[in-house]
Amino acid sequence: MNAKPTRSRDASPSSLLLAEAAQAPDVVARLLDANRKPLERLVAELERRPPAFAATVARGSSDNAADFARYCLESALGLVTASVAPSTVTRYGADLRLENGLLLAISQSGESPDLLAVVEQARRRGAITVAIVNREDSPLAALCAHCLPMQAGAERSTGATKSFIASLAAILALVAAWGRDAELGRALHLLPDLLRQAHDVDGSPAVPLFAGARSAFVLGRGRSYPIAREIALKLKELAVLHAEAFSAAEVMHGPLALLSPGFPVLAVGAADATEEGLRDAMLALRGHGAIVAGASASPLLLQAADIPVALPAAPHPALDPIVAAQAAYGLVHAVALARGHDPDAPRHITKVTKTL
Image (tube, rainbow, N blue to C red; front, side, top):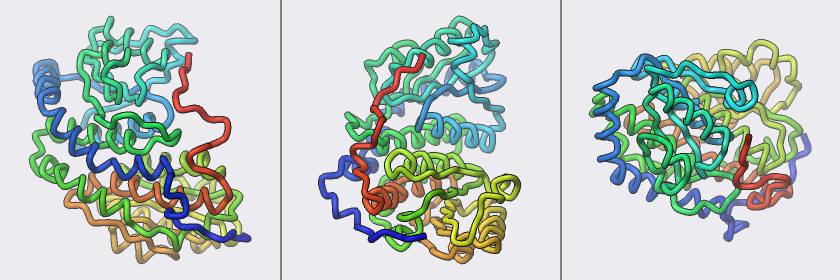
């Protein structure tokens, strides 16, 4: 790779992306306070009508948040969770059997017609419908029986930052309340300070690895895998880098054929039950010639990386993926600048996409 010169995040002081990412700690603090009563009402219904399963519906970054919800609901509550493909309703005319279920719809704008169509069908079927949405006056918020507002305020950057972090926090707040998990609930109230620390993480040692790359892998495992997907998406849309996310459990199959000496890999992982598997994948990829940057609070993962990026240690491992997402914005921003792209003006992309 012929790495281009790097620039720090301060090289673009007017960046909307970083300015809005810096607001995430205050957003999360507002969200946790404002959603106490809505969560009480939602949990009361969930306990009165325990769902047999959960389903999520979302697009883009919100779909990565929905995948995080799947891992959290299944691992913490044992609730089987699936992702609804909206086109099965809007294009194929399917009548989904969502009765006795929980439907979680996640959206920044709350306007996409295909999400609304799925929610309408879920309501007719008698499912418990919940919106995690930034706009409380949106059609999605009005349509769902329950709404957990993100409290992110206006988000002008095309790349979602504070709204994505808020959606992850709302998911964990739901899991903590529904599961009566006092430890997770206490940890969540420390999240704003952790996010402030994460925003200041220096990822610059990893920037040259991706600055001149043609392709890259982003690895995760368990609850961190959706974060790997989100980082890969941000690298595509903001840095114009072909980055693909893989679970550490899958990367040693077909994707291995893409590796060549010096191939860049970013691994993001939590200090939880998945860290050994991710460590093993990192070492295996290094053995095949990849150069691996590792972003984590886990000493095990940092030791396995060619380029370690230490993240703040969270009091509960479920928070680690959110901390990693916040820290990644600075890295993606720097990689975009190093590759000659304005992270506030990604090509071909608009803020709101209304999919039919």
